[in-house]
Image 1: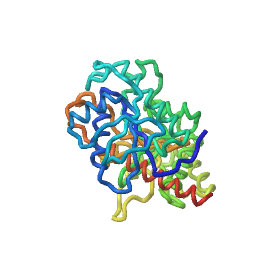
Image 2 (image 1 turned 90 degrees about the horizontal axis):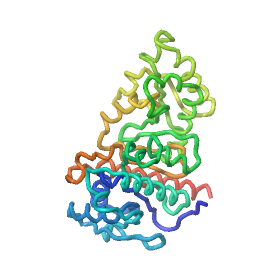
Image 3 (image 1 turned 180 degrees about the vertical axis):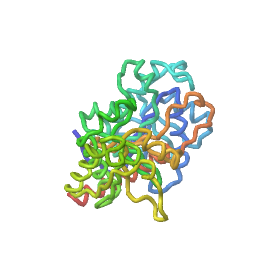
Image 4 (image 1 turned 90 degrees about the vertical axis):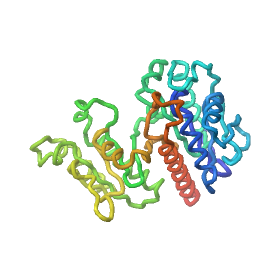
Length: 346
């Protein structure tokens, strides 16, 4: 049962794989945010030993302290609160050396954070990076964290969105083989993506009628059927139906020129891309250090930094926290916007 929280906004942050850079980017992000007035409070769900070792290694000014649900949340100027969801051995928490025990713990952090978000104990969830390979080795057979969260929330319709400072886009298909993409491009899948994206932009960005550009699948958006019929068969009908529902969507756009910017920016507030690399090559080229992964369709706000565990540099203090900072800031803004909208609707 979800209850409305009272008091300042609170964001839960899962630590991610203990052997990865999750703890490092969280500590660095907390240090960067500790002097920012008005920033939402945060609590880390992870391993207390890993977080303390990481803080000492980085010589962070944010002291790591154990936190229990129901206790007051310390400000970042006082401490970084950690909900200890595991007590890993020294072997399992060694930077750069993933393990089944560590991957299982990372899965538990996700579940604990999602449960807190669904019950309304936190206002948003930010998930640290995990290893899909090691999570599956630990017996949790999911393509990624998004599917774990959707399964727990019993949500069948969800999409991945990626947001940077300038570019925002949602994907119709995500982690499937390129050869399987055309079969997944149908009116329903494209229209569902447009709807979820439009709803998110209204609720979490305050855009009353967001403008959404929809990419084609084939070169030149199919060139009137010369290079494929997905545009004519699925994408254009989905755009027309979205328009009849009052959504300001347009396309199909030629993918090779869809992301050209004029002096005023992009022609749209956000875009819909048909497959992973079609959208993310543009996004990561423009926004690699600032990109945020957002899950559309969940009953709570969830963001994640757009990078992996980086086992090869874990423990070296070389990880950059830019994407984690962006994920926290995006979650905070979205939670504030949603809370404001709910108050006005009450």
